[in-house]
Length: 176
Image (cartoon, rainbow, N blue to C red; front, side, top):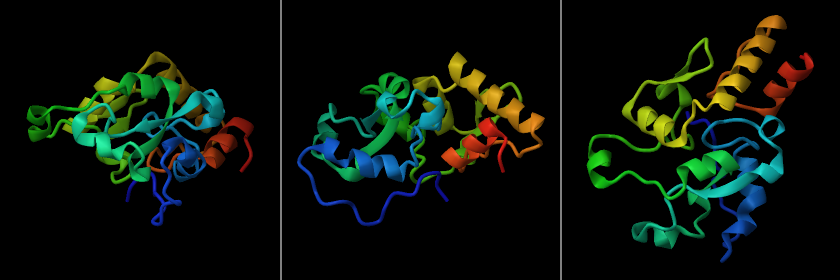
């Protein structure tokens, strides 16, 4: 099972990909497709952008500019880190690529350590963590704070295979 489930029937076709934003935001449960932080702890909705998973700047992906399923909800920092990056053929042949959490589990590629770091468990995990800097200082600090809140309140730790507003809100407020 993947972290994010995209709607099976896309919204009506648009010739401007920004028109898909509310649908994409909903499909990604208001979480960044990469660092998995929810809007409520990642700068709010205004800090989120639409990322072309397969970069529109690459000629082979030019036809995907308005493809609903190539658009991912991303916090500004992750989108900037990813930029126009895409592994070349040689890297892909060695299985270095971006983890796609629309078709893959977080736990197949990463393990959260007690110190808040995400330890890559696969080549795609290594590539994604390095390219997107998923162990940026502020991300690790947020993960540590969420872990500490869960432990103080005797709640389960965040399961990154299922990030959600409700789960984070419970940790922040202490409500069950």
